[in-house]
Length: 201
Image (cartoon, rainbow, N blue to C red; front, top):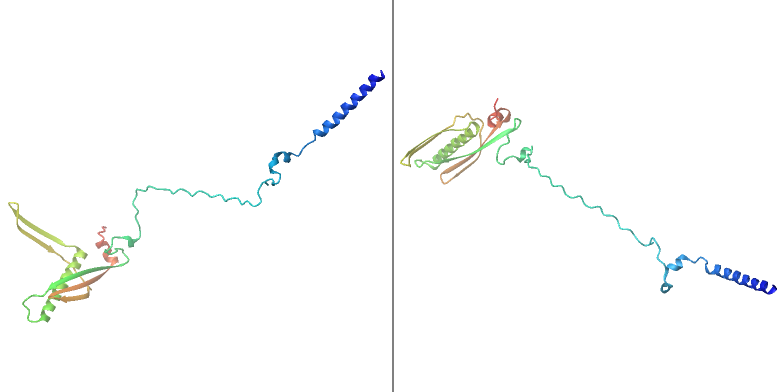
């Protein structure tokens, strides 16, 4: 009986010693040490977030251009965009009309001075005619005679009735028997606007 009791006591001591040694084997290990492989013992584990890292700025996409299909023509209200070389007709401005008249000296003259005077007179009359056409218009009468599909006679008559005042001669050129006269006429837009623009009422 004593031998059995002694054997039971030795077994109890062995079991207690195994339990104590087993608890020391199952101690909690460092989880970070398990993540580093044995070949990287001399290296430093990476730090998150990195200290010398500069994040990139986000770039906003450019808006896509809008293409509008406007079939309507662009009409500008600026009078300077009108047809060039035409007087601007407004009721408040001064309308300027220009004309270039030409005259030829007749051959039966007794002196060069007479030839110049007659050529200049013809050029002035031609300039007045052109100014009258711009102010009042011109009436044209034409008559053609055709026989057997051949033009036999052609008569064209033009007529201008105008009253012109204060026309100025700006330049006179005489060369080789031809006289050229540049004339200018200024009209009051308050009076001539409705006539030149064709307004009614």
